[in-house]
Length: 277
Image 1 (cartoon, rainbow, N blue to C red):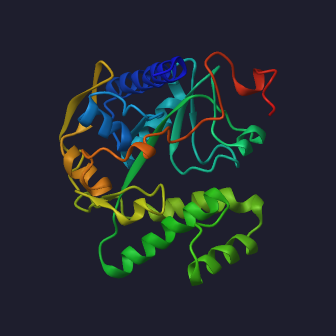
Image 2: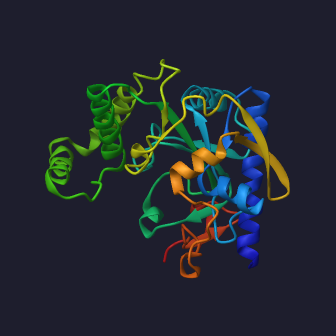
């Protein structure tokens, strides 16, 4: 492990600690998720070639986190959501550390949103029950993602053509409002606590449903020398996402997921004199 990766992990864990304490103090449920959860189960640490931290929350706790954070944000850490800036193309939140930089793509250099080292926070919603309701909800999820990102899913056929048409007929200045509008409608089924859970954050996620009681019981798992919360049904969650998640990928796939172009641990991107390529 090189020093940059070691320091990146330390900084991400620092942000995770802040979120963990904030959730604990405000009785908010969260769980380690995705690659971070695999790391906790399989390695009791980061996956050796991972470079980020993911957590997930039920939508009601996620919404409370956003509201509480706005009122009493821990100093030095910034909340980022899809309702804040037009060039933030995620429908989930990030908590970023101020005075740090993590550039993933060349296009980010020109974007206005904060570009600090981060932890991703993914909300989970209730699935609509019934064939027609499920189709409507999936369409709303897809419209939320389409207008949030401002580009198509890359699919062909009539779906790809429809996405291009929908982006063309709406002015770009309206994309953010449309994304928030369709996202709000997609959550119309969240009062049904007996319905399964789904993450609305990528097109691939929309195909996977999790048990309705996923967050009813949580445990703690060791991760990078400390304990963090995880759903007790972590095996069910991870098998739904990845199948045999205990199986290591081929060596050629054991690389940083984000492959950052620029990392700085002391300055915001705008503070760097050599920020341009």
